[in-house]
Length: 329
Image 1 (cartoon, helix red, strand yellow):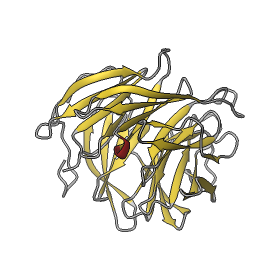
Image 2 (image 1 turned 90 degrees about the vertical axis):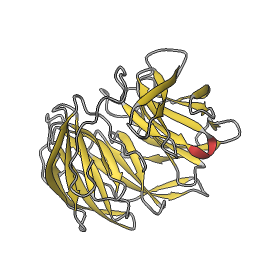
Image 3 (image 1 turned 135 degrees about the vertical axis):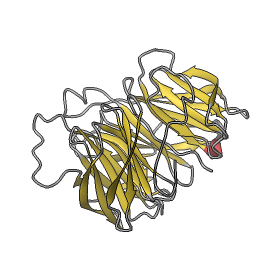
Image 4 (image 1 turned 120 degrees about the vertical axis):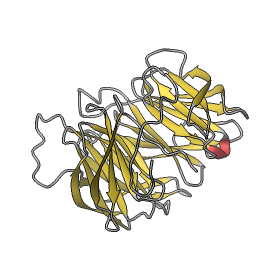
């Protein structure tokens, strides 16, 4: 990627893998981790070429069908955490000195349901993020309308099985992914089913998520009935002043201004393709890359000082594009 213009080009396939759905890097950017249905896989990164060498794979549970869909690395604990959608569960792994997955260290089964009988008949863990101090992992469960707070047990390389607390969403909201702001004082929860964002004030000492005002990811008055709309990804700008969320089928990126936990919708920019399942911002905050799954492409947008998006017309064809991350320089 050209950091000045935003132009991108395919350098080649890093590795062949069946249905990798989400990716995460270790802190040094030397190793990559991916989830694929029932497996978590570790790779070593060739920094010169971007090529990946598979180290190993481990199942997220003894039983198949867990549907691992999201993951995060807890650097201080040398631990990988996966959120398993179909099984409604959370798995932890210890990471060996060579970056491979040493062993599965924990498995937590969620319980419960909520009001959407089609999507919330059971728990569906959908996102896992580590707190800035690396003492907690927050897990979104779409099926129970909860964000569970788990304490990190670094010595055991696992999570304390019983949640230390939880953030409670409106029934039927369907929390998918969350993101911290730069200060670490706020967490923004993207709700897939009712197309909203709920900001929480994060109080780590008390292990509390205090809900603030929920806002829609769509323009006021948008008709949603029978449209098949759903949200997908949420990212906070490095300066903390802007929050971005993607809308599938509506095929837009919602841009919010942020101040002290309050969000104001600024615009809904077309995502440059169909079904923006994921997107990410360059580390300098100058560009946004939208991964449009159904049109099979990446679209590049420049980000203004006001947080607004402008299409650059730079694109790359990536069949089934699902996840974008940036390797540290």
